[in-house]
Amino acid sequence: MKKATKRNAAHGSGGAASVDTVDAAASNAAGNKPGRPGGARSRARILASAGKLFAARGFNGVSTRELARAANVNLGAINYHFGGKRALYHETVCRLIDDIGPLFGPIIGRLREGVADAAGDPVALSRCAACFVESMFVAVLGEQRIHWQMAFLLREFHQPSREFPMLLAERINPMHDAVSVLVAAALGRKPDAPEVLIRAQGVIGQIMSFGAGRNVVCARLHWSDYTRQRIADIASVMIPSILASLGLPEPAGESA
Image 1: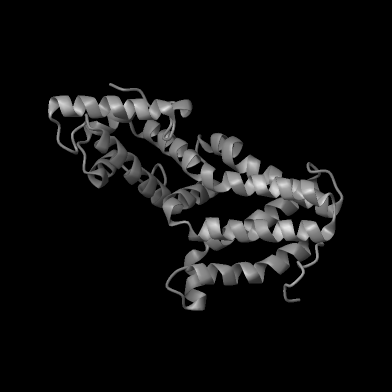
Image 2: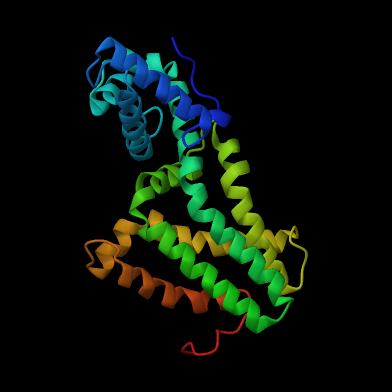
């Protein structure tokens, strides 16, 4: 029986690709149909189904039988590929980390570069902050390719699992650290000052709340869902508020 894939061989890495290649070769040699334990397609379906189910109901809210049924695989396929539900959850978190990295990594990089280039100038910091907030709203609310990943992440915020420290270290802390640098530059404080960390959480929290409260927002505004234009409308309303909380002026050309 295969062991659960470790973090350094999660989806998107060379290790995971080699596992799938071996699975596919074994499946072809044995003449396995999709759904039997030995196929790479079965493994991929299990991961895809697990992400959606765990995001919606958490680890304890989903049975192994439900996972197998959703993925259209035999019950033994989960043990075969992952070593059980606990290890499958870990692998799902690894996949989440890998999936959202290419989206949020560049946003973090641009924010850090913008703050450094601003060199403390409030107008330049304001432009940098506005660009960051707008990019984050688009990423959090509009990226359908990471829809279950964002729901999963929000669930981990409220009901942290044993994988939460890994999420914190690899994805949450880098974002918070970058926003803290922005806040510190705006307030003239150190990035690790308690007030700075609290305000950084406030900035990120205002953005994430529109993801967690998607159904409420859409119901109140009579929207069927977020669209590109509606996300832009949300950003245009929230950017001045977030800038004001940091004592930054609105960027030139924006309405007062």
